[in-house]
Image (cartoon, rainbow, N blue to C red; front, side, top):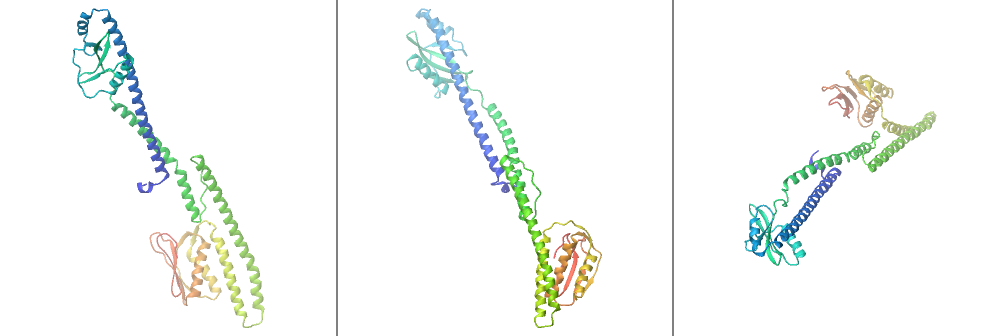
Length: 381
């Protein structure tokens, strides 16, 4: 099925809804995960800063003021949390990570004064915080390597894989959901064409199952009504023939008068109309096809017309088809009646076989020639 045929369908709308829901949930989940991860790392960094300040304050408090600077320089180990004299020059990076700004704000609230913060964004990722301690100010240097968020690419790859699997599963579900409706549409087309579709097996969601059950009931009710209508027409037409026959016999037994022929013609016309009602009632009945010898079928029809005084020549040929004998007799009879009513003698019927499949068809050519032949595997007038 091509894309233009899918536009506006239930499958397309379900698929679009599922894709948007999956993408929205994945984006929200990634955002929430990043927020939680950053919050957790910030708490861990703050706890380490508080522990580092407490350790250094205890050590410096036990040392004379003149030895504190030497002690701090002796413990200046790159890559570890450390305290430096205020004489050291901090980096002057323009951008400070959000984690550093949050840490400075939290420390400022705890210490009771604003805390300056700088960020070294080189080979070492370090935060420099200006903190008060023992009536002086120092630089607290905190390495951020272990606190920086990991690369987002693996997370995005995992989220993309999960989203893809979810979308494929949702597509399969969305494809299966409208299938019972597609079968229902095909059944409605059969019903529209005048054919009773076979009962559908209820499947799909509960509402769709209920709809299919109701459709099966409706189709059964329509078929029952059509059957009753055919039976009523056939019975009514059959019951009308008896009084018409008696009326025709009574008219024929009357003495010759000017109105006798007209009355007989009217009775024959009524009989013909009744016959059409019977043919119409029988036309909706499904009959099985059986092998037919067309030359014998044409002979039987021409024999009836010969008894009515219609002379028709017949060019025969051997042709056997699978067909409805009654329907083909009615078809040929209608052609001959139309030829007698609207055409002119001489009348001729020809049976021909042509084409690879040899399936006969009939057609009428003026003024009174009825030709039966075959082509393309279908019966046609």
